[in-house]
Length: 283
Image (cartoon, rainbow, N blue to C red; front, side, top):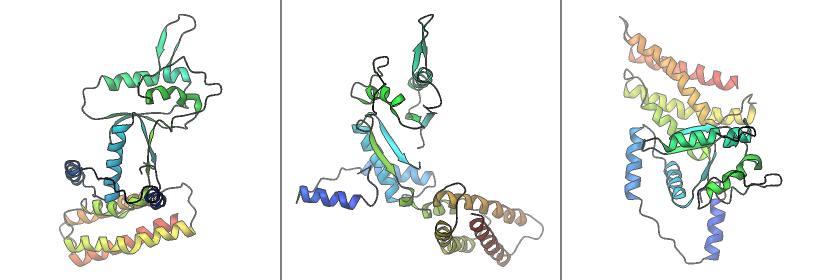
């Protein structure tokens, strides 16, 4: 289920129900895990969206049955080190023997792995290979992903090798559109200045609901992107720009003659119109 796209899930469930009629799988009891997830999500001022929680559970389940897995999509908050395997040679990545002195020199991967293995932190440690997956480097990782978990080098002929990594890795596909931008808006509301009243906060939410989605639909159907991005990133950029304008309201409230509630309302509306329409037209 973790590797399926949203449109593939109903098809898969239909096939399974045809192959195994009247068979109902028992659901695991994740009561304690769900409680801990809910507490930490709220502590981080995020939103407990069911899809988001479901993906966290899929990551946990994948850790129980796989030695390696891939988080595929536009996306993990752990202690991680990023390595681009195609930016360096095989010897620099894994290590190599010096042909003259016959001494072994550790590569970037070995050095990074040793550093994480010696860490006393209780958090998970990930090595993220952020680069193209091809046989030039990934074939040497297959033994790590097998049950023996051993990195066997100098024993594989990569001349005609083909990557068999997908069969060993668990795949977890992330679809940003399943999350949407509204949870990001809900979390953003918790960061608004305290000088804004509940009425002003409700106005900002109403302005977001009224303008953002139609503007997103417009730019994706009628505009051209110089740099491809997602609705979540556009909404996040918008919120950061909007926060800059809200800082001016907070500054005026400390002046000798602070703005009235009606003036703040007009300011919020004017900022919304100029900023949102200006940003979308700029695309």
